[in-house]
Length: 517
Image (cartoon, rainbow, N blue to C red):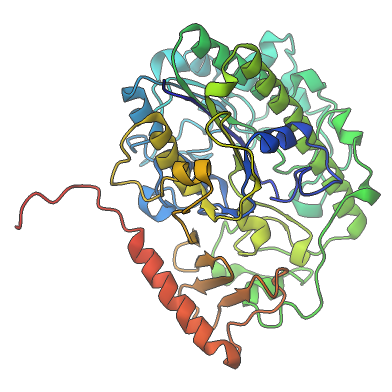
């Protein structure tokens, strides 16, 4: 019998913000999921931003191959996705929650349906599943764009809010970001200067109307639909949190004491051997003009500790609220008898800085905090519970692994490695490294990282004097960059050669060779 496949993702969650590895945060349901299967603490994203990694999850390809190479780009709607292959095998596929496969703006050459004015055209979204699916291989889609009280809210979530009787939903969100006036935002948290709008007070939007509740409820409804139809499903339950702005409804907003949360710190001298952009994050008003526009993270990261603690307390609350609805989803699977026939993966699109190295949020700073992601796998009866497994994982492996679980041949065009046998047995992991790309601006911010079991190398295009080399075993906090260390020259050469070999190995052969010429 074909298994169901349930992929649950968060957005911008630090890999250590699970109760199983941080007793200061409460995630009883994710802890329960981990106890059912395996926790992989060494899982990596293929790119530390949303769109490229989400597209990699769908395609099993790296961003440099599938084309959505940075934020503000679009995964072509003609791209071959896991949903298309699973549909051909009899699966019903649904996406519930955040998509972000397309940019917030359209251009004459590339129309984005995740942009204005379609974002707020609720009639378009009411008819979306009738007229526009399958979309990226999904037979059913319920999506929304915003994080917290951001102004780019609409789509299926806004429809649902109106169905719940909240006609004035716009008042709970910041004004639209395309310049069109649409009323006030009476109940939206106030914006602060710290990190582009961190909120330090609860969101007045009632808990039962929060998009986390919407994602959880609609995920359960999608599971029930497939169960009633007696059809195997692939459902991507895509939560929006704990991505900033940091605010959440009560009681979750007050769940954690800011004085009790864990935050990271800058260590004096740790940037002395790091590239110039790292050093400038310690300035009050730095200039990054020479690196081009639209570079996430290229700004001052100076912050006061109490503001960061307040933000992290809300960040924890956002995670616990999401965990609450993940628990309801697991309960429903068990209640309808589908739990034992469902392969469940919980992960995140990329990590997050909460003060580590003095940094906040994300950016082209390839520390473990932003590259590693939480990664839990469970399949009762097939994957025996075994606690932690330190085998390296990459999110680019999800598509081929899901196809393997469904009994579908993995296309040659996919660059990820099927992991199912290793997940089940705990032996012979197919991957001994991970590659992380980051191509934020053409020719200016373009870096690539190779992570092995012990070492990590990062190289920068057009900047031969920049580079990073860390011994993760001896220096897990990544405080001593060995790239320019004369005593590490042989190690550096070895890692550069390893990166070249890894890059060659991931080259796909999408079409078969049928003739000598």
